[in-house]
Length: 373
Ligand code: 8OZ
Image (cartoon, rainbow, N blue to C red; front, side, top):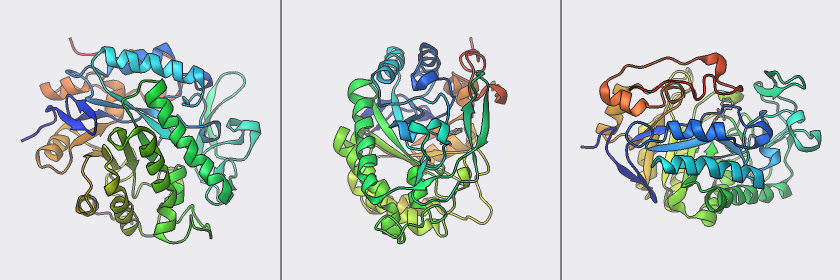
């Protein structure tokens, strides 16, 4: 029977344990370029004996337009790729594995973060009632409401699909990542197209479930064509309210999406259960994850099933031992415990998170959380 500490295969990637470091936005990449400090941070969590079997990088912009927060990294410029190369080399030197999370924020942005101060793009011109993170001229960072988006023209959509594929190629071929994770969750561009609350298009990307799922499927196929399915995962959040997103009827939408993804042969599917970073049950938004997984597998979906959100060591161990999941991703716990896997093996001790240093800043609250002796 597998447990949290048993090795497995995630597509083409051999992992030493079932403990995954979830993608975590930290806003420590000035000018979108990954730094040496970031390499140290990821390397601290990459040891296959004490840390993550697999690291999913913080969300990374696939293009300038894809950016929605200050000081998040990108994956489209030479300097960015050189910066990431240092990160992946540091992780691999410790024996770890790391995939890059491919990100387009869509409407969750601010015009001051966009090329030529443009309005952020979205399926429809509906503002998200949420905040983004900007840095003022004096260097102080703060959260501010997103700006009004504009609806994408039909002819712009293939360019975005192309940007995802190019970023995936950059990640694997230039930056040395073991694979990529498509960010289809948390109210960003792909989730905006999927869900009725943000998508009111009247063309073939809006309306029916088939139409709303079209962009996510086109992006996934393009990324698979670029780097091979066995190095591609996708993250989804069927009922999260994050970034003001909602769907009128998420179960048939996600059951359909997973049935369509199944034949592609992805390395893994990563599901956020409930409200991202919050309760595992969302009031008024029931969802059957078991049914979702069954729909995927019945349609031929193999690959690993990764779960996330509110897992404690016991719930995680149960999920693996019962076969309900193959991998469990931990976010906040990996910020404050670089050796989380070793701590779970020993049954503790666990240490807490300093929320004040989550977004922006330097080494404090980033690379200075102590490991066990
Ligand atoms: C927290 C702050 C900014 C971005 C996500 C990429 O929710 C994020 C994110 C989280 O997926």
